[in-house]
Image (cartoon, rainbow over all chains, first blue to last red; front, side, top):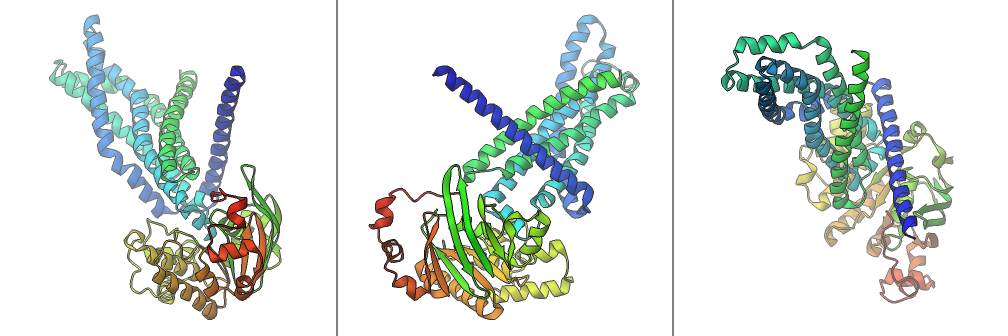
Length: 262
Length: 257
């Protein structure tokens, strides 16, 4: 009996997961169809770009500055022991541009923007606004998903670039004003170590992160059941799922780029 | 004309519609009555293609809409508008944008003409100069009126109302009943109204149908329904807490969706 229960639980979870990925794939297909086959509404995309991109600038700046500072201290601790302080700038720049900048920015946006998307669409679902869209012959995917998808796919790379710069500036503050490394050396080591491919691979994956956040958040919003409690649950699920998928996608791309651009 | 033939629908194994048959002639008002959660709204959502039945057909002007593709369904939906229970106004848009939504999205009308049409539609429901307000600034009764204005703006041939008088005070409820009657007279629309408010049903219906346990158990003019000998119908229309409905099914009060 106990084994049966365990298998039942595992089976239910696996089915729910397959159902989720199936639903997400269908939504992605429909969204891509609308992106490529119908003219995009520029006003609606700009509005979403402002909400997801411009309005996220302060929080992204604050977190990236802290990450830059913390990371520089941790690296300095190791490098001082090895007597290689001059490489601090190199490690900080490479880590931020290739990995920390993209992932931290994506996580911030998933928490800030993704949660808002799910809560908004979920509330629309509960109050029958999604049904109303359909009865007015407007596709909810075209009206709600496409602008958010396009805006996030465009905004996340820009936010990441911004986070990279602020993070490096955080490292600069510590190195120059605390560790007595000269400003010229810090800048030289930073820009000499960074290759174009580092920047490109770092930014390319954020386009996918942006799409993941938009699709997962919209999907969870559309599937809200059970009033305001349902909206809360869906919002939490959207953020958690986005986090997991961002890290999983990052793992995939890091491995892929490692072999493509050795 | 709308015809519903042998409509069946289950949710999680529970039969909600169990062979519903109904005919609504052009230009008439049919009121569907029944207890909360008996599947009235589900039936309404089948008529506009928001839900697909397990079996059976919904014929709008002799076209079965249950098997239509999304594009074909959109063409049918141009004839039908629906007024949702809570209004379902879009929070992020102004009242004017809500009312003119169909034309704003699909085009087909110049801005000046649309502004005029929006004001006319609002005037028909007794609202003036509120185009620039947001839905959150309106009272419950006003929201319902704006929802009706949105439905009549494209001058549809069929309007579906989901519990139009639920959640508003008796005076507003009466004015909404008057509104439905006058729209029917002025615009000659076919209306289907789902309600459990008997006063409203008697006041607006050409015919009344009662949905009970997934089937239409009675259909007729308001007077025929009032004089029905069916004890289930009598218990419902007189609002009695004891009778065949509650004896057979003490926990029937469960929402289906």
